[in-house]
Image (tube, rainbow, N blue to C red):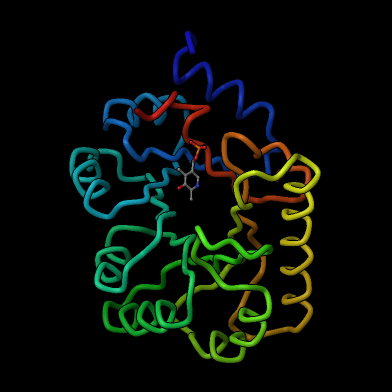
Length: 222
Ligand SMILES: *Cc1c(COP(=O)(O)O)cnc(C)c1O
């Protein structure tokens, strides 16, 4: 790609509806590149490794209005760091992790924003609730009053064609709607975190509220 990070950000941002939050996925990207994206107006950054993020966050402390999003698989033993370092966790992918995060959030006196990661189609390569497991766990999740459950996060399995990907995103939106209509007191379904560089246009078409874009903004990760 010959264009600069800021040119790409301007182009992509202007192609998205204003209501869609653009999260720049900065994993394996330098603090310098994050500064370029920040200068182009990005305030939401996504990282998938706690340790890697901590180093860059320390370097970027002079940019206090960044909202940090954790998007990777989170091991329980890193849950505390995740809550301390990130405003959002998109990848809450099982009930044990949710329970641990709730407990830690209470202890630390913080209210992290989270999405529940769901697998619309079975996918052994990814973590996340199946639809039926998620529906079954809602009564327990609804008891977690410190975690701010805001919506769903979905990644389609590899190898799907475009109509199949669109279908996964549409089913994710319909699932969120179904959960919302159950009127839980502590589970909100305002957010749909879906769409990466290769499929974000389909995700937006299906109603994504947050897209997570790395390669298309920062170039290939080597
Ligand atoms: C890496 C990653 C992204 C960004 O992927 P690109 O294809 O580079 O846009 C988005 N979401 C998650 C969960 C990721 O791990």
